[in-house]
Length: 306
Image (cartoon, rainbow, N blue to C red; front, side, top):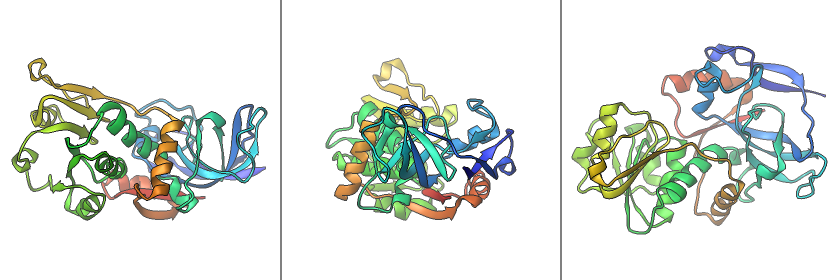
């Protein structure tokens, strides 16, 4: 059987992404074959496409987030059956296609209260936010958190998870994203394009969550806003701190934990976590989404439908 897939056969600019006819994969032992309802764009996809990460083997079907319906199961899979709706982070890529295989031990049942296509926005950004807030920041009620770069997909989840934990949330965002950031529950929004963050803060914070690349100088400046004994968590740049400050600083890469996906799904179905979908586009527009992202013209999560 042949399917359509957005893949690259060489590294380069967005034009190397081609929608091609390729063989439909078959599930091996312990895997499920999903009929893909949607995938979602993540900025990390650019690093794989350009070759900056050099972590993928060519040819490579782009995309790590998937939501879909079980089409077939491989030997040994008993927890899922054809017709089940699932979400997953595919560590080996392959989500930008009509069908994709996933390890049965790394999937979660999709939320019941939102369209299956929209659930494709959860895995990578949601896991990153969950682990940043709960595993690494260990945020608790009454603490103050500064989320730097809150206007993206991870930021939207992080604000909501921090608010749900009972924290006071201060978010940096441009004017373009400010309304959405407030809607997610931020108590304060700092427009970093017009106001230095340090000038806008009335007091130090317990936690700094950094979601954007920083220069060494900017990192040190933000680190100075964290109280003694506080924590810095970053998904991009390493942020150096003075040993005398008592502040801990960690850069981390999100792990593929289905139990965390399950928790995110519960919050979606309870109404405590909303999915900010900025656009729903056909998969054929994936290359243009990459172009726009490189121009800084993407907000929130973009869903791509085969």
